Length: 296
Image 1 (cartoon, rainbow, N blue to C red):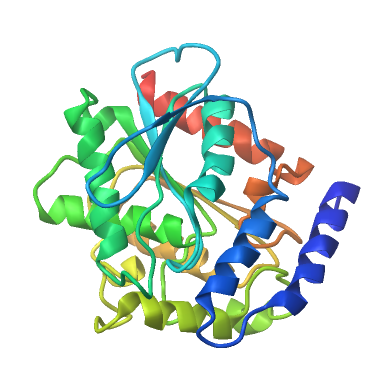
Image 2: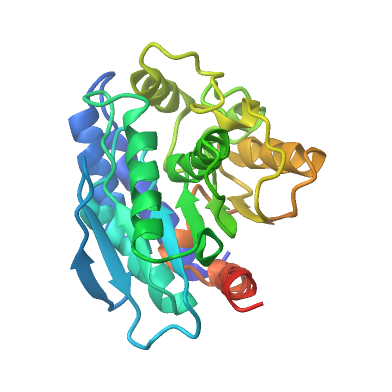
């Protein structure tokens, strides 16, 4: 592990004593904002985008994109945390590193707005792009953690409504099973500086509301993943959600989806967002994936 990665990991563990009491989502949101300050950010042009029920923003790279395309980025935060400022971090990074504009909504959060509010807002953002002149094949979805799972839930909803699917999905550490049933939740307990299973289950209950945790629109791992677009998956070897990614990869392969996965040894949850050297090959892969989608 590179020295910067070791220092970042140590800083994250120092934030753990600030972990919240059960039900204290307000403090959890502040904690996520603090961890967000450790992320690498890039200079981009930011434009507010009005959506029906939430704020959104478009980050545009310094130079014009080589083709007509856009990314729709859905941030993480367990469906209970993550504001526009937090989403701006990785949203601007994606814009600069891929060379394409990125739209990111600050979708509504639980427990104030449980399922299906976040999914509704993600669909509104997607429809906004289509109404703005983008073809579905000129849109790539991207997300980390809960946002990664939300990308797949959005694909399932779009397919169910008979709407065209995007050109691809990039998911970093996707939270695809809100039952938190994978072995990595126990195997990597204490290794991941950002997450605990107890906190995730609390967020899952707050988000699902009265819906079963195995509802495919809540936990897309339990859905029919046939006919989804190409997918690029990432996870850290030391993170709790490692088995979510592994199981999702297996289900996508079983469904006939074109999917690739990459696991970074010793890395924590959503490590790609933090500008560590270990993530550099992943940004190359993301850039290639986006270019293949938009510049055939």
